[in-house]
Image 1 (cartoon, rainbow, N blue to C red):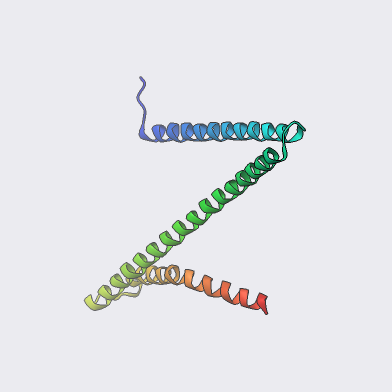
Image 2 (cartoon, helix red, strand yellow):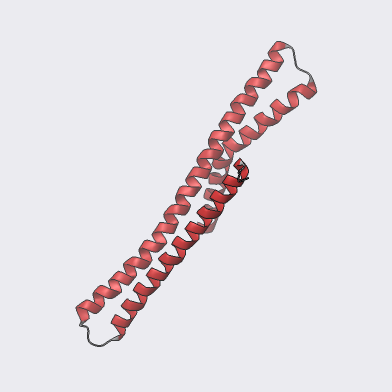
Length: 148
């Protein structure tokens, strides 16, 4: 009566994970907002001395800087992972496609239609391996033009 299939378990897991992440983000935002309002109220009162005011402003500044650094670090790490996965996938595709292509040619199975997938895989793998180098070269040349 209450049998659950694997795909339903996955959907339930994704929904609960999304709900948990959403709740965590909302609560973190609420706590941060309350903290900032408390610091703002403390800064608006004239009952605090200059050293305490400077400390509160430094705390606000450090908090804002830390928040920006966190997202920059996350984006930088994501970019590094994507580049690594593309390079490794491209390298494997290039090598495996090339080995199949050479194997077909050496074994005499060099029919045009049989070799097409191996040739396409080799070309795609080569493109994925050389893409980061080409993009870096384009970026360097663009920056050189801007500096002139």
